[in-house]
Length: 162
Image (cartoon, rainbow, N blue to C red; front, side, top):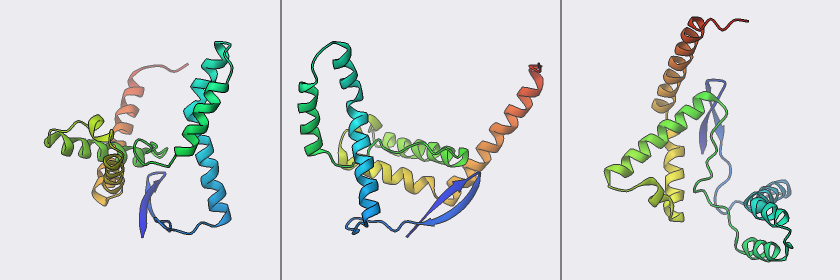
């Protein structure tokens, strides 16, 4: 399988070698374990800071983190990062608009839909699929070009030169 990505406004196709059941190499396992540890750390950073600022011990936070760690699994819901590339980011915004509209047409709010982990995974998969389709990428390129043109025109008229 493959996935289309956008780099500096150009579309490239890359392989997607991983799937459920994939046997991990040592490096892949190390990378996933590092990401998992960072996620858990990010999820508890506020609680640790609050406990320290309040002068409380960390025993309660440690116990909660240990329990959370024992149950932690990767989930796709809400985890989609906005791509740095402007065209990929715009394609993702378009995809989210489409999925949101499809849910709205069925009388479902995105927030309510994402509350269920299975639905969240379906949402992420739909956004991923739509954001990499040729038509979506073409529209994203057009929108980014239009925004750039508007910004160029607007900046000329602002007389903000030093």
